Image: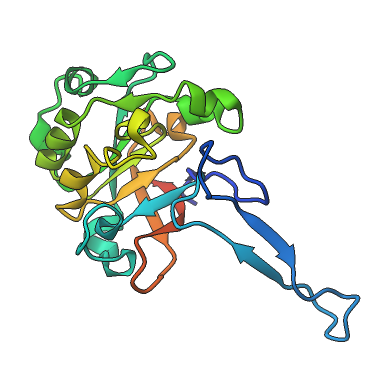
Length: 228
């Protein structure tokens, strides 16, 4: 049986959120065994872009972009992985195009087309759930990295750090990298974990959002399957 690695963070009530945002998660009982219905059900209050594993659709950053349910599973959300090792990045640093090219380790850029590109800094694994995760977030140089990644044209991109202007997160300058990438319908698969387990083997990524009609993004379950 093929090995499976779960790249998904958990979801729970009062999940840590970016300070100053309204992305609070709440899971509360609806029915219980104390009611005449004798069953457990729950109400879920979730943000489409909460601080757990989720997928951005073009509609998130582009006014007339398509929604998350319009992504193609085959063309955008399932494919062979290519992992870039950025684990040398320091807290609070910005990863540059030069850093990403160095991590390619002489692999031609053309080889990344059609891959599920995994940008692994180790930041989520080390700090998610702590104040440091937000206060010293690793991010990407903008707009140069967005331009470069969109030109690579991967199927999708997995991140375990922020992929844009972290200082401008709550301003209209938030999408300095988003727009180029989402403009080519390349899904941004944010806040993944456990990507360090993918080194040294070949993997297939499955990034599956909820089929939320007309929505700008979605919580997602993201897994990797080892290829034989």
